[in-house]
Amino acid sequence: MLTEFWATASTAYKTLVFSAMGLIAVGMILTIVGNTSGNQGLALASLPVIGLGLILHIAGLVVRGQAIRKSLKR
Image (cartoon, rainbow, N blue to C red; front, side):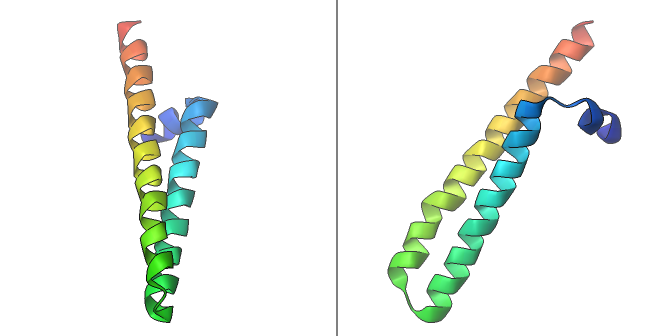
């Protein structure tokens, strides 16, 4: 199921998934760099980046759920 879905997944879903993973990774890197260097502003600025990544992840789940619902109706 997973292999088939990824092979037939829409471009919007794939874009959301990779964007979410990228933003979460960048946010985590900023958090680590900010905390190890003692830069509290950088550490705090990373939180909205991680939050946006999580929101995109949820949007990807919605897009995937809609695609699965459409395929089950057929």
